Image 1 (tube, rainbow, N blue to C red):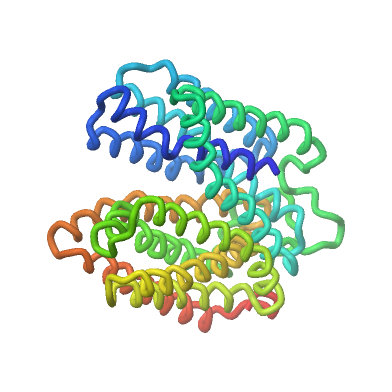
Image 2 (cartoon, one colour):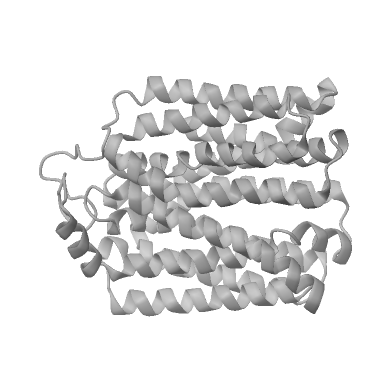
Length: 395
């Protein structure tokens, strides 16, 4: 509930900020890109740090602090009149936003046994994607109804502050440091070790080299996805010939479908094996990228979208559950933050190369590059899983 409400607040701003900057404040598109990149970069860098903080001082205070910090940013957006000031503002916003994912996923990992963890992560993913899908439409509706962008920013601030209030109330009984596991239980593959020393962490990393491989593959996967971020809408409109409203409808239906599929996909990972499910998810993503660049038609776009949506639904819950289980004892928040930093780094760097490939080599180049990267990532993961077999519950 908290995570979905927060993501609804963050996503409400997504379509409003570029329009507000260009139409009301006269900013250039280049500046809008800098504003967006500032948020993405800072959010990526700080996720690992916030994950470590969540392990040390507690999940609830970390989440509440991040949400309160981010709730101030939309209020400032409504009053600032100098476009360049939106860059430092989004830096502050990114710092607050980066506290949410590591803390939330660590709480889910703390509260769920390994045999049910992918299902739990799938449920978290369901609310994340629902907020991401509904937020832009909600923001545009409010602005269209009221006739000013400030109302949309006020709504985003209210949603984020409400999420913080819910976190204060509803997370009161949550163990603060993730070290209050029931007596005799197993935490991931490492057993119960509430306060590990550095030697424990190093030994866990030595015994679980797959964790480092997963960080690397997470970067490769999101780098491939990031290649398409600046050109996907342009491709759909200019090359395929879809109107804006149809593009928006396809996006909404796709994201909501993936959201609904996340919970059964998590259940599948728990029963079939997290490693196996993640590998198949990556393979479907690679197949979708290869299909996407074959022909510029609505049928091809639709088929590739189904494959890519299935890929995300399968991969995300299994991936985050597996990272939480491979994490050193008492360091789930740090591991989750590091994984999300690796993913975010790909999403920051990918768009920079995607636009260059489009301009220099043509519209197919970003899709071919993404397909090659996902194919390589799938091969690396499969080889690593074979060399470092997992227990039967997560194979």
